Length: 322
Image: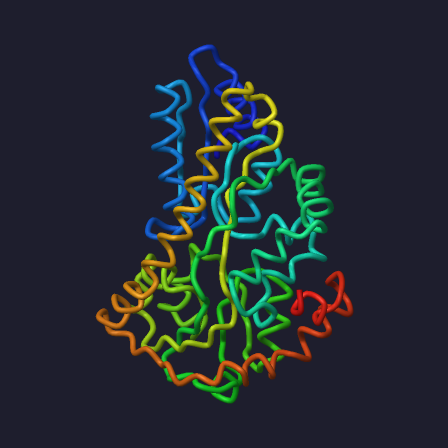
């Protein structure tokens, strides 16, 4: 990073267009053991094999390029060719559609996928990501797991989280949703989550089982409460101008492989979710199953309604009834 973003961009462009082959620089803020990194690993393995080494992939995960927002910024500048991770690109470039990734709005991954396959997303959202961010959505939406709540005391109802210092991603809509429930949110980047809990900067967090496992949060939290407040998913992305500069055969290979690995990553995540919950419990966290999830959704409703009135497109009812 010492050479600066413009220098990295120049270097990446030189590698991508060299006669010795095409190199893809891919990043993720997530850790090994998550479905998005799994998808990235599958993609690297297959495209290198199927291209007979003509395409190579340098894959750095665990936040090597900074936060997700910082990584998308570098991607837009040309410093990174691909990203496999969360949904901050939508928050950055199409914030009015970010409702699909806001807690307490959507209750299932299948419903979330249905929303993102609408004509409105196809004709409005994805072209805007390319125009504003130089970011092209690649492959299918990938399941990451249902998001639940970690803490050092059992959480069963909204009353249990009143005033609790809750780590959240740096996202105003997420803060609004959880403030409506009664928590006291504190934005902390994912790569700093473990230390923030360990040092008492925050006293609780939330996330899917893969996140708890990959960060060994059982070392710093005692309870995992099944609030089921967001079906978490992610996406693979490719820098639009990088993709357009691939020849047709490379694009066809890219599209086929990315479609395969994103579908497989979803199946991998779904099949491993129960195993991860067992692992979490075996490592000392107590699973709290008797959570009044409906009460959490009801408590969050005033904040969600405000978001649709002031920030999000359409109405909450329209999207829920899709």
